[in-house]
Image 1 (cartoon, rainbow, N blue to C red):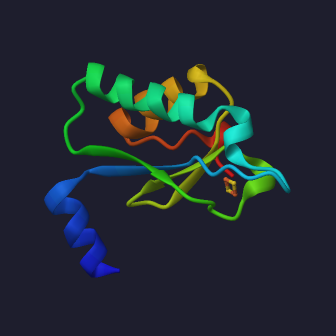
Image 2 (spheres, rainbow, N blue to C red):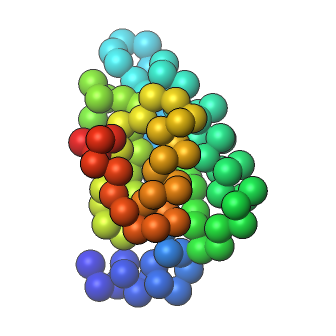
Amino acid sequence: MFGYLKFMSDFYQYHLFFCTHEREDKAHCQEHGAMSLRNYAKQRVKELKLKKVRINNSGCLNRCALGPMLVVYPEGVWYQYKNSTDIDEIIESHIMQGQIVKRLQR
Ligand code: FES
């Protein structure tokens, strides 16, 4: 755990992982537009010039029924989001002010 925190402090203040997994046999995040909302988040972080914030795709995070899901480190806070308004709130509250968005936390 301490090694990861050291890594975080050296490179990123926040690291967001968006599940963009897609499959045919059961629920998956991509069926809710995960990739386009991940791309929106990446664009907003760039527009806001937020340094030390990294956004990555992830495979299945095994919380498929709640999808689309993302997780924010270093805190390990999980969010269920539905649209760009939710992404804006996560960025403006959690990433910019350090305040967890309770209404989206799962
Ligand atoms: S498909 Fe996204 S959590 Fe499983």
